[in-house]
Every structure is written in C-alpha cells, then in structure tokens.
Length: 180
Image 1 (cartoon, rainbow, N blue to C red):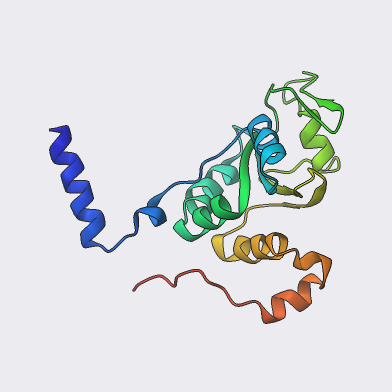
Image 2: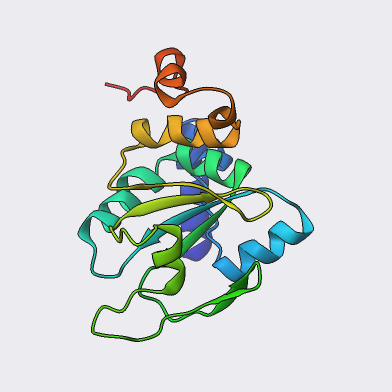
C-alpha cells in the first residue's frame, strides 16, 4: 500500500509538472542551530517570531511560508528560524544569555524583547546579518507578495544603498502568478 501511495504521489508531481524543489517545505532551525551554522558558513538569519496562541501566526505559516517561491527563497538565502516568543530555550548571542524569565502567564523571551525593541507583536519577522547583528524587524502578518520584496531588500543588502520607497518603485516580483 505504501509503495502504491509513493508511486501515485510521484505520478501526480510529475504529471502536474511540479519541480520537487518547489514542493519542498522550509527547513526551520532553532536559534541555536542557526547560530552554529552561521559560525561555520556565514549567511543572514531570518527569524519568524510567533506564539502558540497567535492566530495570524498560523495564517502566515499556512499562506506565506507554504508558498513554494517564498519557501525556496528563504531556504536558499537565509537560515530560517522559528522562534517562539514565549518559549523556554536558552542561548547565548554575542556574549549575552537570552532566556525566558517566566514572569507572568505570557512571559516573553528575552530575545523577543531585544530583537523587537520591546514592541512585542505577533507575528513579527526579524533579520540578523552574517555577523549576527540585527538588521531590522517588521511586525504584522505579511502575504507572500508583501514578504518577497522585504526578503530581496535584505538579502541583496539594498538597505545599505537605497531607501525602501526607492527600492519598491522599481521592484519587480518573481512570484508566479496564480493560474486561473
């Protein structure tokens, strides 16, 4: 039975002309894993900051991070991290220990407070450069067409050369248009 399902799913993928790479999900890392990988092979870190109770975080997972183009772009150009802003993981970054101090019912993690500069809002995304220094953060739900230019702007380090509005005026999306 398992062999039949594998053959059937392979047939569906091939008959629809879907590239296996396009169907791959994002390989999410923990902060600890991303920092370790970054020490060996420097690359920017993308951080999805969420909570278990956040409805818009779940919508962003389903609609934005499951988009094949976004998933591939993130996986190819960043170390993507899923970071629970109320989680209990503990790690060190640039000599500072980050942890959840468990103060109250919805106790925020030190790292969420630091990276979001105290403005806790979920979902949020944040970026670290290849030396683990913060680049920027954005709060709120982003659709694939809203996230794509942000990813390009950060990945290509356009933020060092031009203002966001100038970049956006000439940005051309590479997201596939939906088939009707």
